[in-house]
Length: 103
Image (cartoon, rainbow, N blue to C red; front, side):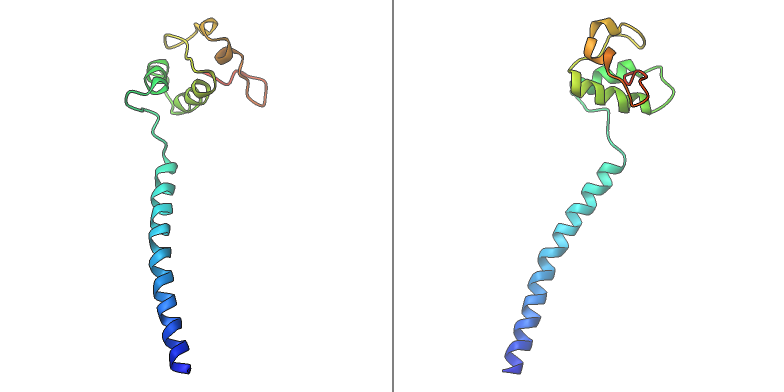
């Protein structure tokens, strides 16, 4: 009886470990892809519009906030600066300090 329980325990551990390892690998890959988001989506509306909007900006935060605003408003003003009258939602979005959120 002890041999049966020991054998069953070993089989259970082996089966369990074979299911845990792939799920951990998927989570690890997903976590790695979330560390550096890709804002340059090929063919993506927000990707192309924000790339133009932030082309003269000197920091990555422009792309980050442009994408946040674009996803909420479904529009991005033309050009690299100004023209916010073209997209009132984009223009009126504010951060926690009351400053404009969208570049």
